Image (cartoon, rainbow, N blue to C red; front, side):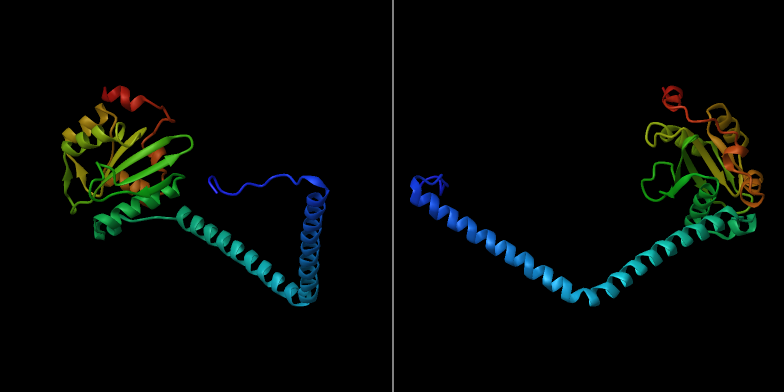
Length: 225
C-alpha cells in the first residue's frame, strides 16, 4: 500500500467494541507487569537495602577523598617554594611546569601550553580580577642572557593570538639591557634571576612583584595597533 499503513478511527459499534476490548487487554497486561515488578522488588528488598547502603557509602567516600586530595594539593601549592639551584637543575619542560605551579599558588588558573607552535606562550593563566597572563619561559645556563628578540615575539602574539592582558618573560638567567628597556617601554614584563628568587623562594605573588593592573580588555590590541 502506497504511503504505508495508517491508523483510522473505528466505525460502527462492532469496531468500537473490538477496540475497547483490545485497550482493556493492554491495560490488564500493564497492570500485571507493574504488579509483578513491584512484587519482585518487595521480595528482593532485604538484599537490595545493604547493596544500596554500600553504594551510598562508596559514593560519600569517593567525594570525601577527592575533597581531601584537593585540600592537600592546595596546601602543598600554598607552601610552594623553589630555589634558584633547583631551577638551574631543571630542563626546559620542567621549568615551564614549575612556573605554572607558581602561578597556581598565586591564585591563577594556569596551564602549560609550551611546545611546537606555542607562539611565544609556554604558560597561560587566568585570574578573576587580573585577567589573562601569558608567560614565556627561557631556561638558560647560569649567567646566560635573554635578548630583545624574545620580547618582540611575545609582544607580537600575547594580545592578538592569546588575548592576554599581561605578558611576562621569565628566565633563571639575566636579560640584556636592550631587552629590559624595550620590555619596559612596550609593557612586556620581565623576571630575571633576582626577581625569580623573590617570586619562587620568598613567596611574593607575581602580580604583586610586577604590580600588574586589573583586567583591561582591549588594551593589548590598542598598543599593538
